Image (cartoon, rainbow, N blue to C red; front, side, top):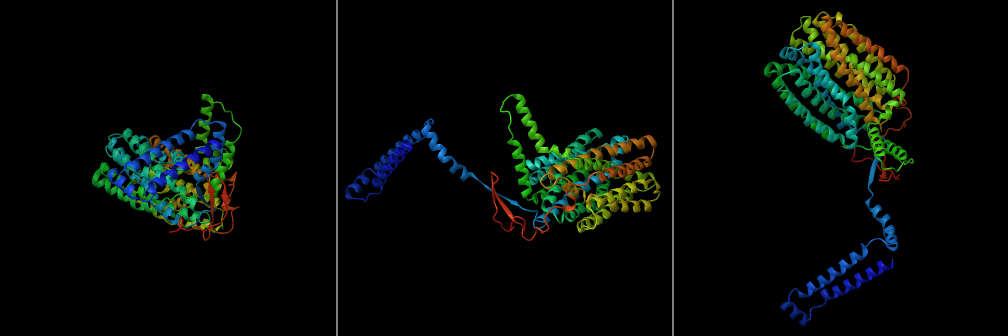
Length: 547
């Protein structure tokens, strides 16, 4: 402290003398000096200030003795306090406001990604004819596209947690367009497997998973309705895109059609721009739990083994692998795998099955549009009905999935175009019911703080099923000469997989255990420092989540 006082006294005296020299009133002597030597006095003052400041810096920045250490220790809390930032965490999801623009983003994303992927079934006969390949090998293109879109969801969700959903979706839109442009130059099935299946599929995963997750973070009481509205874009897209893709193929061949689809896919960047980040108090609680685990006594060894274990632990935390040890969630994931395994067959093989019974190409592509209309209507109805609370959301989901399985069992009995239209209408009905509740149930199994990874693991299971389902059905067709065995197998697998859901219920079914007060009108903010300290003074949610 003595050294510091001496430094400060010397600085003060030197500065005072310089100030007197510079600021003194101008006498004739001064005027004469100034006129003759305009900058001499000022230069001397600045030179003396510079030498004094340099000496003072040397004195302060010298190696720390115990006295210096005391000074630095006294000043450190002040510097840390200045660097603290306050982060606002919402007590509850806002259930509205900017959330409706997030729902709009989800609606458009289901048109650009999911409806587009399902409508790719019209390319299946074209690829078979163009490349002269078998049914199983050609079907592997679309199943790879769907599979990669869903299998890479854990990666997309983890990257979204590390960066932001907005950045991931916009990056995925650009990458997907590049993949489709590259695919337009394809000359073989193997080429398309890499360009359309793997590259474009991964890009669409970056677009789809974060967008679906954000709806669950913005809504609580109305989350089934919000998900139903967002997912209904799938039905609108299937109604419009399937005939459009057939027209593009007829007019420009598959080369030009893929270029147009690439331009459509770029609109996903607009969807990503609408995904404003939101922080919830449950996120803070999850972070506190992870920090507590990190504070456990650990070996301070710097060996390669300890570094490897530390890196592995961080990776497991990013992907939240511990979710798979939750029995209820694990059973739901396995059941979802079986359901999607049977569900995936229709979109690849329905158009070809219709052509086999005498239906034209254009009429066969319209079948997917019929399903799209039905899905659009009943995804809205199912979400609204589930939020009423009259029936458990889990039971509504199971009714929809069981209906899809039963419909598959009746496909071989549809021998006319009219019967196929009726079948696709009912298929879309039940599909709309259970699809609108997948993300809703994931949140009930995992909670909002772990929703990113819960969605990722669930879509991974569905993607694996898509990857396997369509080729298996194609190989069964090659072996039997018809699709009857494939549809029978699909229906049976769906019905059997639902039995797993009776073994364990969600930990928080239908939002039980949440506050009864609706958070929308007066959602409170928690002001939190970087070190996790709360400022409990409530403030109303204003511009952050309201338009």
